[in-house]
Image (cartoon, rainbow, N blue to C red; front, side, top):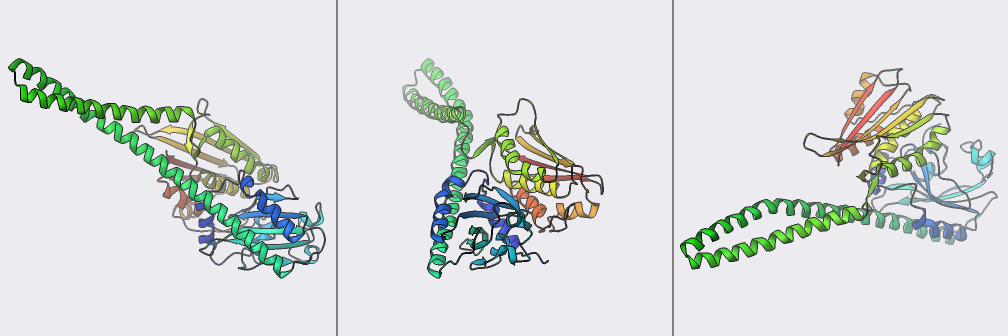
Length: 399
C-alpha cells in the first residue's frame, strides 16, 4: 500500500522541527482546546497529534490516554496530505484501518474526523481529530468550528516558538554582556594603573593641572570597573539561582528521552539503556533542537535493530582545547548496520528510505534531518558502522 506522504514532506518536517516542541510537555497549553473539540463534535475522544518522520505524537488528549504511535499505524497520516478535513465513517470497514490495534482492540474506534494543523506557510504539522466508538455525523457548521480550534492550536504552538526564540536571544544578550564586561575589565585596569602612576609622579613634580586630569581619569575608570564587576556578579548570581528555562540538565534530558522512546523500544523488546558520565548529572545544556536530534537517531536505531536487540545512549560533556564545553551524544545499536555508501550519503545529508527489521515503514527524512540540524548548530556527526554489525552515531555540539 502506497505511503501517504505530503508533497512538501521535507519542508513540512523541517517546519515542525523549527517549532522545537517537547512532545512530553505540551498538554497543559492545549488541554482546553482538545476538550472543546470533543464537545463541538459530540464525540467521546479528541486528540491533537503532531507527526514527525517516524512517529505520531499525541501532545494533548481527551477521552483516550495515548501518547504516541508509529506514523504508519495512524489515521492522521492521511489527514496531513489533505488541505481540508479527512473523514472515515467506519474504521472497521476500511481496509486501511480495520486491522489496526485501536479498531480491533480497546477502545474499538469506529469513527474518525481530522483537520490538518496548517501553518500560514502551508505546512501540515499534524492534525486535530475527533473519534468515537459509534458512527457520527458532523454538520458543516461544526466542521467550521473545529477548523477554528485547529487554527488556535497552531497559534498557540507559534506563540511558544516565539517565546522560545526570545529566551534564546535574551540568553545570547546576557552572554554578550558578560563577555563585554570581561573584555573591558583588562583595559580599564590598565588605564587606572597608568593614571595612578602619573598621579604619583605629578605629585612629586607638583604638576597641579595634570594631577586634576589624572584624578578625573582615575575616578571614571573606577566607576566603569565597578559597573563591569556589577554586570559579572549579576550574571553569576542568575546562573547560580536557577537553570535557565531554555536549558536542560543532562539528567532532565535523559529522563525526557526515556519517557519518549522507551515505549517504542518496548514494542520490539529492545534493551534501551541511557548513561550519563558520573559527576555530570546536573550539568546544564541548551534545549535547542536536542530532543529532535537525539529522538530521530534513537527512533532510527529502534527501527533497524532486531527484536530483543540492544541500544545504548551515552550523554557526556567534553572540553575542547579552547575550554569550550561540548555535548556528546553517542547512540550505538547492534542492528543491521550501514554500508560505506549509506554512511557517506547520510554524512552528505542525502535522503534515503528503507524498511525496518520488522517491516516498519521508512519516510526518508530522519537522518538527513539530523545532519541538517547538527550543521545548523555548528556540531559534527560521525558514524562507525559495518553492514550486519550495528552502527554507532556520535554527535558533538559546542555549548
